[in-house]
Amino acid sequence: MDISSIEDIRLLVDTFYGRVRKDKLIGPIFIGAIQDRWPEHLDKMYRFWQTVLMEEHTYFGSPFPPHARMPLEKQHFDTWLALWHGAVDELFEGTKASEAKWRASRMAEMFLSKIQYYRENPSARPIP
Image (cartoon, rainbow, N blue to C red; front, side, top):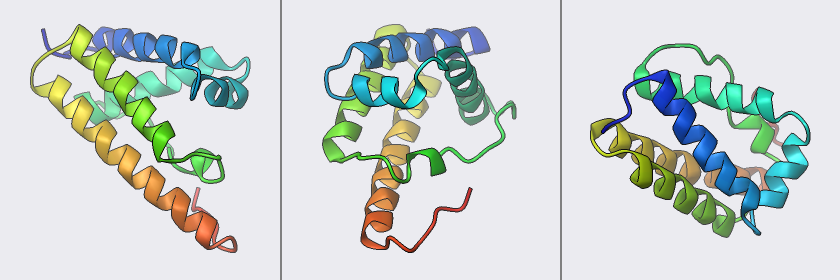
């Protein structure tokens, strides 16, 4: 079954972040950044992926700036992608599932590239 509703997105996001929290490499980073704001963060991620995958514009914001100065490297994004792809593959199959993996891969690539840029150009500031 493919991703076709907000309920599917909630299941995917909840499954993914459940795994993120348990991961030894990226779990502490997420837990440290989000702290006790998990419900707020999950709601934002539901809206983000609903906007991206369902073309129902419920997310308004810039996803990159909160990540701009985080101590993230390629291995962190590789782990994030492996957990995301694993959750998608376990729960769904089809066009939207493939799109969810493709978009996450492009996002990871872009975020890492931008983080590296800001490290090399400390006077530059990400646009919120």
